[in-house]
Image: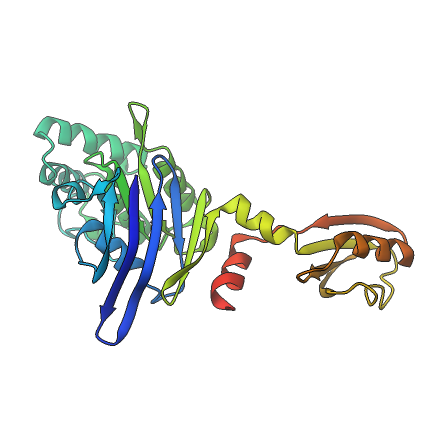
Length: 296
């Protein structure tokens, strides 16, 4: 288990991290989502030992993460970290050997990830000859080729087409060997790609954390989609804390503010006419992101 505890970091007068705490349980994907400049990359680099925190610590399986441990982590940076004139297959073998894998094992691992990531036809090409999407696949392979127990991905979907995005989404979750699940900390370029666990940070603190279904369910209790024949005006006026916030073809979206009663809203709808649908609205991850980060 990878844990970031009370991390703080300043760059001059700029506070990059302010007491950030985040845990990546074994075998789970943790999405780390926030606006540009919120400190995600800084936190990841501290986890890897590339930067030092002003305060706080990084632990691995309950003990302080030493430099030796951090060197075993897999890291896919947002910026390209590849040698452009080196062939794909040789580059992956090289990275595996750098992580102390025996030559034969490095060769086998490189071949495995080339095949799994759909790069077999690109294996003998130089990286600079590849599309940006295929370069991104090579970069992921370089992060995985030494079989790390913890994998940290910084915007791994950048530059990928829809097919490449699907491939990239499945590989980290399926990256298991011998029944062992990796810890995965992912900062997706789009909120919708973090689909097991989600934390959100803003200037530069965590403002919400938990499983995606739990975060969506919490907010589903506050919004309703109501299909009401005729859609008479003013049918919600007698329900304290309830208001129509959006309209759709044949339906309206009702927001229930703190203290509002959904059963009172249902009774009001029934008095107004025939109700064909009355159901909670689960926000998308993009909507959650805007609510929790952009609009705060």
